[in-house]
Length: 77
Image (cartoon, rainbow, N blue to C red; front, side, top):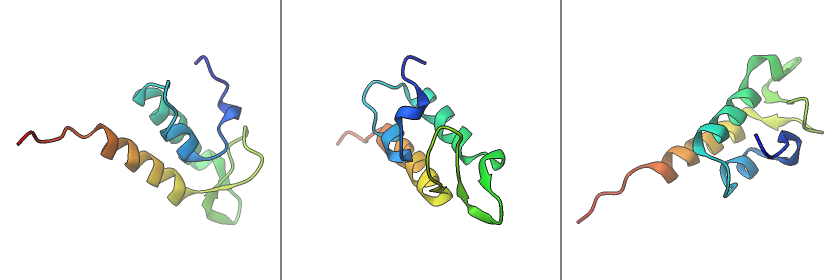
């Protein structure tokens, strides 16, 4: 990966990054969502080692969902 992961402070920073491939975005977001990054006694929060503060799992899932919506083929009329 050409960009250090620590550069991204929020899941949407990853999801909206213009030069990352969708597969790379998904890999970063999936690693953030991993249970190994769960904050002890706060299962809804994740704290990846490269971030200074916890991120809500819902924000991570919303960022993943936005990737799906952005890459969904549109119907031509």
